[in-house]
Amino acid sequence: MKHLFIAERKSFKAEKDFQKVLSEIKECFTDEEKDEYKIHITRYSRDSIAVIDRFISQFDENETVRVYAVGGDGILFDCLNGMVVFPNAELACIPYGEETDFIRAYGHDSSKDFRDVKQMLDAPCQLIDVIHCGANYAMNNISFGLETQSAFLAERLFERTEWTKKFASTMYILCAIRVAFDKKIINQYFQLTIDGEDMSGNYGNISIGNSPSIGNGIICNPYGKVNDGLLNAVFLRPSSPIKVLTAIDLFTKGLFEKSDLIISKKFKEMEIRSDEEIKISLDYKKFYGKELKIKLMPLAVKFVVPNGLELFDYSQTINKPSR
Image (cartoon, rainbow, N blue to C red; front, side, top):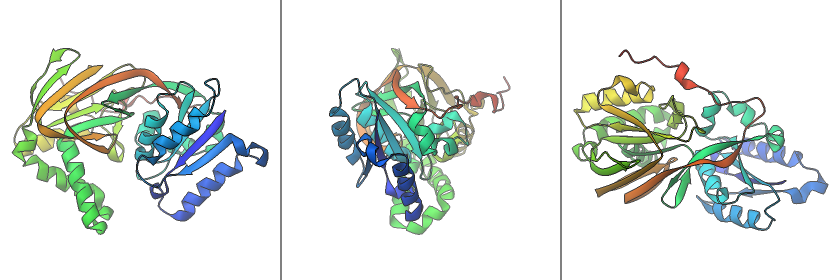
């Protein structure tokens, strides 16, 4: 097996923490095994995709290559898009950064197991579903509407005033309130088919989940399983700002079934068009367009999971709807 570590420096709070992890990786290999692994430190977003392509392409298809995303959700997204087309590639996650939401599918406190570099070298793989959206692949979540607009607005705020990052959770809430009063966003019309069914209409938010968690560790999709062959879509109907914000609050708590404004549906394929530009969050990466095709790729990726960890059933932790 060959090992390629894609490390993102900015995911670490301190340089000493970053260097410590690099040392842990190097200590796992002897001098005689120096040809068995490579470490690439990213310089900018998506630069690792070409690195992964070149590294895997030099080996025969019978040679297994394990690609490790050392950082947050952004670097995991890049690693997925670099390795997904190679049948001999496996994807591993060594989670650092503010959030790495995908691994929460294996429990809220699973990060300590995924950070054990030595264990991850020999850990087994599980086949997982991934999302194919346009020219990209995603592991976790696609969203557009209030959820995405709020995140984009907050990020612009963070770029202009660095100190606001210290109050990120509060800033996201304030941005969501701001967007809830924007009728153009809350009432955007989408031409939409889902597994052949026409569901065109006005929606304030559409969130599509493969795993249970989205940003900041929010478990909004407690029924999500990354190997069940289905995606879960949650549609928010337009209404008054107060009702919209109440529905979003229930959504973030995994209680969307309690809201009359929310429709949920499991599916495999979706096509979306809009006359207005759609701001898209694809595993927290920004994209723009007026149409997109979303398709589940069942059991398409070999994902490395620490010994003893299984998918966690979050549906048992929420309050059931009183209906």
